[in-house]
Image (cartoon, rainbow, N blue to C red; front, side, top):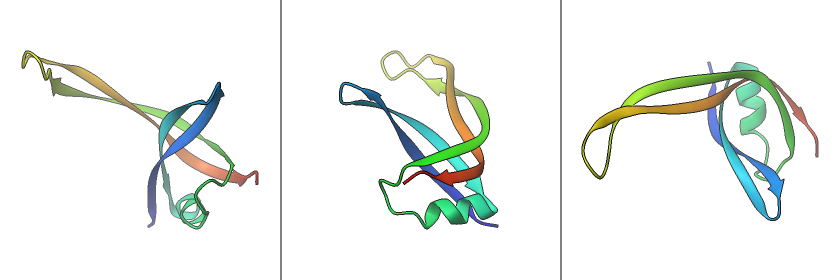
Length: 79
């Protein structure tokens, strides 16, 4: 089965953007991988948050860090 991982750019105004990690499987993965960069899409899916232990770069103490991604179920091309 196909897997697609990327960062989706979300414009928020004033020349700024947020980037959201996405992953997709099977048909959604094949559809996303065939689109040229810059294509506007609407994705449907669920939020997935993972936690992991991450060492502090300054002091070496280990703390919890989090990673959030959207697991894509369906894709709609807007442009």
